[in-house]
Length: 327
Image 1 (tube, helix red, strand yellow):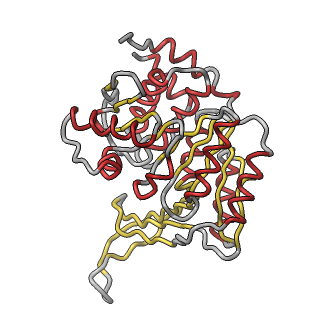
Image 2 (cartoon, one colour):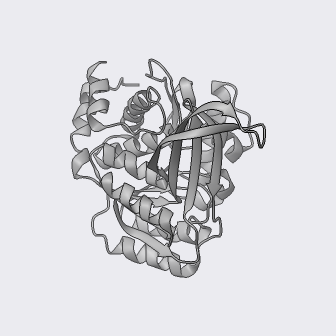
């Protein structure tokens, strides 16, 4: 197979800024509380954290949107938030990251999903989750689709599914039809429990654990990964990209041989958020005319930059281009 030239990939990145990407899924607010621990509580055997600072960042589908924005493209966020303080903070944070939130629906009956992490000396001590996992009704679905249809040009749609209630079988069915009718790429960051919802989309991007759950197979070898990828192509009638952490990723397209792409990361500090970096880069590359193989290689470069960072910090376009330049 022809080797992908980093110089050619850099030409693709030059087209990112003109692209319009929709990210639809479960929206979350991530809150980090940083502090210092010097003693144990007299009330219980737990550390006392003296708070020094707090930080709010986009979470869930909003983190995927943040990655699109960081790569200098136009991103439009779709989903549902409760009418509460966490909603106000998330929308403000999204705007500071140049994320368009006009597709976000406010539902006073729901609670905005929030994940609070408490860290002492940069060690996570506790996580507190506020969640509402009730599935959306037909009214919310109709509003989402109505706003999508009114957007005009859409280059691709990313569905970021955390199985928190936004993504339903009905919504995915209508979304798949809408994407096909309008020749829009539909790329899924999947949740295994919703496997049947994804039939007929353009591409799914499970990690190794998700691929195991989607197929019921244990993936220990390259042969196992190939069997899983081919099974998913057959069952879901779409292309498949399985990410395998420090081993890279494996690409499966109908009527083509599997392609295994080794990681380009020099050092791995933190893999959190790498999946969002991958799907953001894939969507932009494919929207910019790249082949799926070229897009996967470019996403692999972006993931290599991402895992060298701490936390869910996204990869910027300049960082990605610099990574290509150094090869």
